[in-house]
Structure formats: C-alpha cells, structure tokens
Amino acid sequence: MNIKLRCNICEQLRPWDKISVLSKDETVRGIRITQNIRYCNDNQKCGDEAEQFTFLNLRRGNDVC
Image (tube, rainbow, N blue to C red; front, side):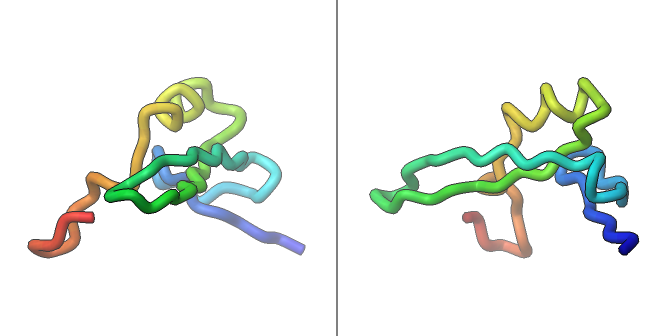
C-alpha cells in the first residue's frame, strides 16, 4: 500500500512511515481538546516547529477558533 500523509508543518505529502504525530492536550474555553499534529519525523525543523504549532490560531474566513 502506498499511503501518503500531509505534514501539518511543511505541508509536504510524505510516505506514512516518514510522518509522526504529536498529540497536545489543551483547554479552550473550559473544554478539553487534543490536537494531533502531523510532522516529518526525518526533518528536525518540522519536529521542532510541531512543538509550537497549534490549529487554534488558524483563521478561516472571519471566524477564529
């Protein structure tokens, strides 16, 4: 099987064995959430940036998460 996943950091499409997932638990407005951030496990920069990455500050239109 040739499964590929997109890195949330560099946005490259990579083979599944080159992608790892960092799970971060946070509380937002009193609700506990888990963010699962995909990053290239063979790229130190992606790994470092995954620690700081959050989906919560991404804007979609005028809405803010």
